[in-house]
Length: 106
Image (cartoon, rainbow, N blue to C red; front, side):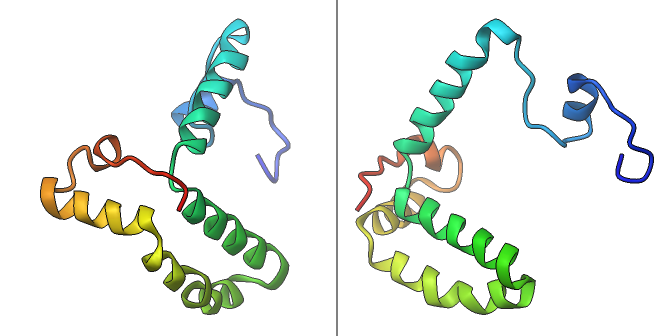
């Protein structure tokens, strides 16, 4: 794609794992809103750290992002969401840990 400029249909890109999912046009808005609600109900502090690390990578490169991980990720262990997530993982194991964990954004 980079060298040839060729265009591919959405289903091909999904099969190649370039896009996560393909939905019909008339379902796009409801699917996007549904996914946004899942993200909003998730570990928002962790999402913020992920976004910060992506920004660091884009502005300063991979080595800088790698160096920055401990600075921004270690405070996550003090959050209620991380502590609850770890407790849930220990109690129930890895299967369905996301479904069993209720995040509060703290």
